[in-house]
Amino acid sequence: MAEIHKGATITPTKVELVASWMGSQRWYAAKGTSPVVRRLASWRLGDPAGEVGVEVLVVSDSSGPVPVVYQVPLTYRGAPLEGAEHALVGTMEHSVLGPRWVYDAPHDPVYAAQLLELVQGRVRAESSAASDATDDTVVATPGAAWSREVRVVGSRVLSGEQSNTSVILDCEDTSGAPVPVIVKVFRMLSTGANPDVVLQSALREAGCIRVPAVVGSVAGQWPEPDASSEPSAEGEHTAYGHFAFAQEFLPGVEDAWRVASAAVRAGEDFSGPARALGEATAEVHATLAEALGATPTSPEVVREILDGMRARYAAAAAEVGALHDHEDAVSAILDAAENADWPALQRIHGDYHLGQVLHTPDGGWVLLDFEGEPLRPLSERNQPDQWIRDIAGMLRSFDYAGGAVEHSTGGSARDWVANSQRAFLDGYAATAGEDPRSRGALLAAFELDKAMYEVVYEVRNRPSWVDIPLAAVERLASGFEHLSTTATAPQEDTP
Image (cartoon, rainbow, N blue to C red; front, top):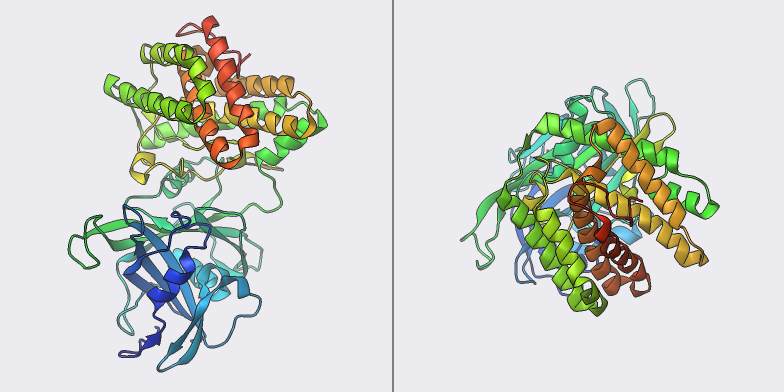
């Protein structure tokens, strides 16, 4: 157990150190603002060597209109950690221990190793308030279908992530065999179960091998601040959510975006892999519906979904005036969708595109990252949705793969896109027993909604690419005149 030095002073304080550092991190949501940080909770992990302090802070940032809660794991060292200069949060002076170097813990091998020990249930979270005490508000849940005991021999942080921090762990089992693991450390915390944990765990427990094996997860409690409260305990309530999620890591494989993009550039037919991806998608949807249930879609839910689509169209048209030219077609598509027969609501991937899928040499397609659309509140991402939303997302992703190559080469990838989309839908229909194209109005509405999101994103972040989703809107709008509410899908994505 870690020794707590009661009465010791620290300069600067941990909160001050975190506040000066957090604003420049990729996962910090309020870019361009100065964080206003207060500590909500904390817990520790022990270092078997007794040299490194490992502490997880749960803090709120009230610099925006609504407080945002973050997880900030830190390690405290008595000397610099070689090769970790980029992960240095800062230095502080401890009145008992002297100078301390403070690091972003996912980059520290001691934290990485002890986090996996916690995930597997071999150690307990420790109190930050008292020596020789556990923190019972932090609970680890080993994967129900995971039976291998592994230990960390090396670790490295996966670069490029925006909202979370993933650590690749080089592990060995008791026989010395390598067992790569990846643990996702959730940075922005919200009350409620993380869908990535819930859905992948449910799929593996149901015997589905279309997702990585689940090693386990860590969840816990913290006092969640009220948006109107002052920095005190008043007005707070207890929140509960996931801190980390560990799963099997698949080294040496590429995501489908890279594989598909290479095929476009090389002019290679992608129909076979696309069909197999459709089959895998249908298998995952069926398993989720069976494992977690499905409920009929009420007229109230239909209106709520379509009202959201209409609002997103209005917002996109306000930023890109050219979209007003399609107002009549957009209205016709959404009106037709409102009168269509909607399938049951069920849990889905929620943010499905080629970057969320890996192709393994012997296992086919494997789906990743079931967190859902990151800009939606966690409470919404935990609700059942329409499986056709995932289909629309993947169709749009095929279009983007072709559009990206068209941007770089000036040529046309329309035939490649159309053939890949058709093969994907054929594979889904063969496995699901239902062709998404039989729900043409719904498919058009969900594709259109995704394209509107893309228009706004590109205008704000990558204006030179906005022609990709604008062209999709044009094709959907012009193609809908040939679409009945129950028959053929629009020519844009399902020729």
